Length: 308
Image (cartoon, rainbow, N blue to C red):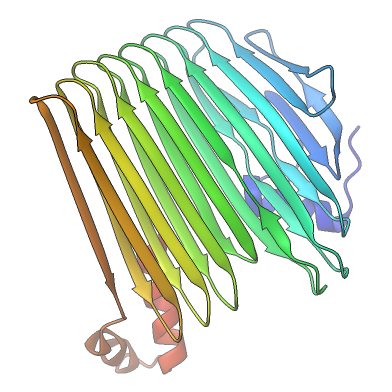
């Protein structure tokens, strides 16, 4: 039986929507070690011999199953690098929930670098949810540097929800994907920074097969003195379609750099990029204030709706 303290429970709820031990396959990592693990008939989770990650194998044809692999950190000064490899069999349909929560109440920086590699078989469908969250009143930073590498076989589908809304001081988010014929990648990133936080998101998507496609969209809010950079590049190497979009709200003294990039190496590659950065429209705030909200409440309502 897994014993969790109140901080661990709160972090797991924030990053994985877990109020208890999940059903199905899971691995819960806390402060550098696994505190609970379960495989199923169709999903096998095995630890790397070095103890710094997992290998997850999902059998071909698996349907309506999930894998939870959240990480929580509550010790100040802890730094770890974790490697997780996912092998999704042909025709499988699975939901994978990851994410990391750091509660740092001490003077030293706490850092988690998670490297996730996905090998998605023919016709397989994956929904991947990765949430990052930071809390704690210590002076040490909460640092998260996720790396996601996706290799997609023919006619596979991957949907990625990447969320970071609160408390992470520094993050470098790197995503690389290679798509075969007929494969489709959909990414939805939601990000908010405040204080002196820094967040850099980098995407490189290679559309290598005929009929492959990608849709990478980021919505973000930069508040106070925070800084964000969104750098997304879609490379069309065949008859394919790609779209990347950055839509951001800037507030206070925030700074945002959007670098959408397209590279067409085939005459039949159809690629589009969009970028928009602006402040909250005054008429939106006024309209909500006429309904009884304060100016601050109106701003929060707009931001919550924008990041939903």
